[in-house]
Image 1: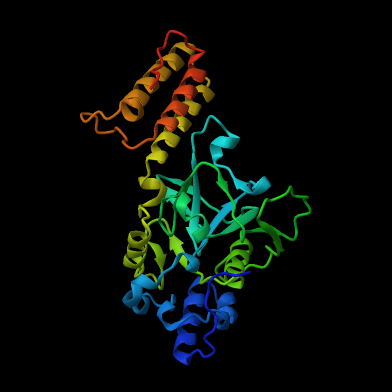
Image 2: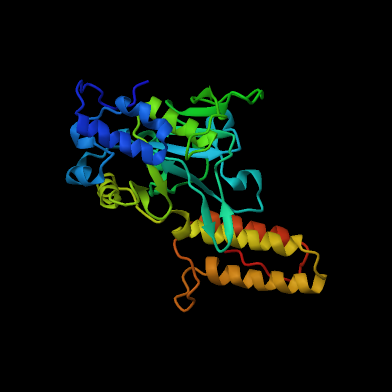
Length: 323
């Protein structure tokens, strides 16, 4: 497989090998034996952001692999967002990490983890770059269905006997999820090892700092320059994206109709929610409303309107706005 990584360098200094080994050990010591496979040109020493920062223009799309951890197998080679499987939850976004796995996230007492997912999808970043809505190494966003390009690998546990449907242009690779490292569980270890095997340099990342090494985020300016050169929008990931607001609102609506409240109370809550949708998502730009979320494309507003109308069938007297 052509990964775009230049492996012609035949000599690696002891100092560079030591840096790379230390970098891999910060992810998990079990990865250290792979250090000699990560022989990159000197200006692409991704183990040391201080060195690499002097050559910010050298980060290329071919250095990057996008990783998506999921329980939903991308049948026919397409990753679908949550709304495809559950139309009541307006999560239109697909989330990717770059050269890394998704770390646990805690927010307002809730916790999300991707440590025990069934599949890992590894996608050559350069081949999906036109689809990137917001770039963040710890939480890159693509909106709507994502067709997997040639060169994509889907990891599947060798311990799972299931038969899988066709995966389009993607290649399914079976690997062992049962062997945990010192810091990584078996699934994340398998993903990191696969990242290295197909020619990419692994990183730690999270939604707050992006890549980090030794607890220090020295890569931020490198990624900002990368985005500037390739016309990408660098953002804070889901927490700062307009889609989070509309998704959270849909989950709030779902909760109204899931609870066993009295019809009058439920109607009052729904009426209030409709007004909230009008003020926060559909108003077209109410400058006097501090909660209005600008920049929502019209097609997503219409999806929200259709969801409100489906719920509104129970309360025909509640007027639903068209947009």
